[in-house]
Amino acid sequence: MEKKLPIRNKSKDNPYVLGYDEMKNTYTVEFADSKKVIHKVEISDKVYEAFDKFELEDVSELHKFSKHIEHSELCEETLNKRALHKNISVEEEVEKLILNEQLKNAINSLPDIQKNRIKKYFFEDKTFEQIAREEKCTKMAVKFSIDIALEKISKILKN
Image (cartoon, rainbow, N blue to C red; front, side, top):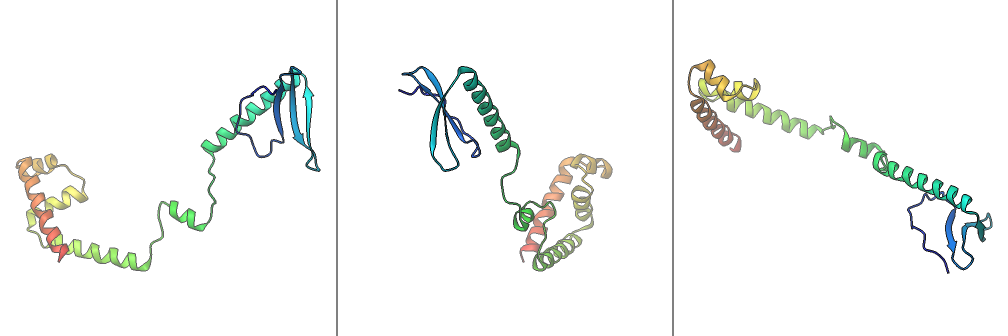
């Protein structure tokens, strides 16, 4: 009767299987030779411990590999999917330019106060408070003005 040893993930390159024969009270190692004939050999406790230690190190390496090393096939398509600056088609570039032009026209069609507040808020990254201090008005007045401007821009772009 065989003693149940822990079942471990093993490298496909690991050619042996450790075992325990309870009837003989000995450890075994099983492997296939070059002719694919399976052999089962009794081994000492020390040899078993060496094989077991090696197998544990092998398992540890497999875990490191699976956690830290990429497994996907690297090809042009997968590299493009991960690119920070993805290639865009001519059509996408033209659409982007048209949208930018429409946005610029929509902003320029706003009253001067709203136009300036939109530019300060979105393009100069200023807060409502900063804009209010500069213009000597309330934060709520700036927020309300920008909200109304965004509604106007949205309506212009939808048409």
